[in-house]
Amino acid sequence: MKKVTKVFYITISLVVVAVLIAALMPVAYEQATNSITSVLSTVFGWYYMLIMTVILFVVGFLIISPYGNIRLGKPNDRPEFARATWVAMLFSAGLGIGLVFYGSYEPLSHYAIQPATADPETEAAFKESMQRTFFHYGFNAWAMYGIVALALAFFQFRKGERGLISSTLKPLFGKKMEGGWGTLIDVIAIFATVFGVASSLGFGAVQINGGLTYLFGLPNNNWSQLIIIAIITVLFIISAWSGLSKGIKYLSNINMVLALVLLLLVVVLGPTLLIFNVFTQSFGAYIQNLIPLSTNTEAFNSGNREWLDAWSIFYWAWWISWSPFVSMFIARVSRGRTIREFLIFVVLLPTVLCAIWFSTFGATAIDIQQKGVVDLTTSAVETTLFTMFNEMPFGFGLSIIAIMLLLTFFISSADSATFVLGMQSTGGSLTPDNSVKIVWGVLQSAIAAILLSAGGLAAIQNTIIIAALPFSLVMVLMVFALLKALKAELKVIESKKKTV
Image 1 (cartoon, rainbow, N blue to C red):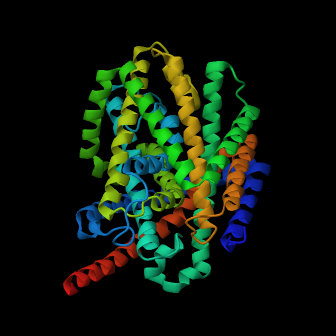
Image 2: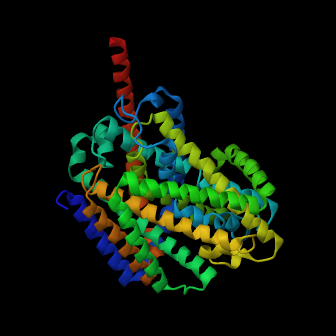
Image 3: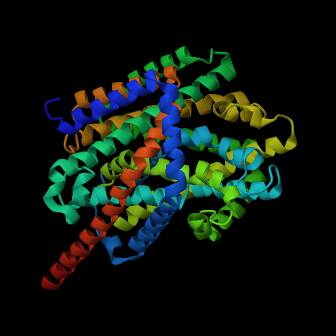
């Protein structure tokens, strides 16, 4: 604990204050944050849509440009992790519980509950549901993760800067980033990370509880969820203690194996031909409509704006708020990759994998809904997946695998977060002390437990979305700083080639 910086103590203080307010005045806090979030979505919706689109173009430019050959590290550095393990690690950190939680629910919701523009339960709604889901988990989102992670990795491994968000802005602001302004930026990053992960842990506990209730009749209440959080906390602290090259590495590989097994089983046991057709047609339509989807603000149809605010703009703010945590972890495990390889595997591959996942689980849920045997829309969000499995062959076994996947995603997300929080609060150390990681791990779980008991997860979600606005400005500055630094770096490389 001697190595922690003042960022650690400032953020801890702010976190405690926010949790106390949310726990002691949950209704007032939620109402206030709801109002602020609603205003931000309405006023800054165009801004979120625009910056996510511009970042996608920047990433595309970097992939095809000469900058793509620059290595994230010294010229002789090579990757620390094998490619398959690396992909598993970035995928687990970037999505985790969200894939299982929303895999069947989101496409079903866009089809039968609240379509964006089409009438519910129509062919048009089916087509639209898949395109919109791909959009929310597709190129724009992963490009945003990729550009923030790229900036962190480039400045840390190529330029020898500390692994902090503030360090990436030095090309623009110089040593000012080592003072109060740098501290402020790092505090915002840690604050967003803490509450983002705490809310994810809360949702994970709720879905695990929902699955165990559906399968075994376990009481679905706060006590059950608190016990789940306590058990998971012990497991991910053990993993965190073992270090990056053991705990997170092995968990990420387990995640990918379980996810692939579950995916293949649903493809085989579900409407196989429909899944293949839906993926092929819907992914093609998504590519064709990528620009219209990315820039649509419903400027001429206010009736559809409510849906856009509740889904697409909410998602962009949510992804931005998660970017300090996920991007810093992706950067940490990507040393030695070239920029081109890094961006292709961080942006293109996860987009395709997400499309396959949502095609499989979404098409299966919609197919069951169309048959009318059971109304999946009446299920709670956390039990929709298990209700769907109940209508499939070997449904009990599928549910057991899904719960196991939730557990491993739960542990790896919390483990990754404690590592990143440890880095951010120890001046960017690549190997933060176990004591620091444990403090953050226990604190994350405590926040999730307190807020679940107080019913304050929705308010904390709103807090994260509010925090996304100032961080989005930081993110824009990071892009300018990165492009400026890459231009200078390429000149250095070319001059060395000439001298040789």
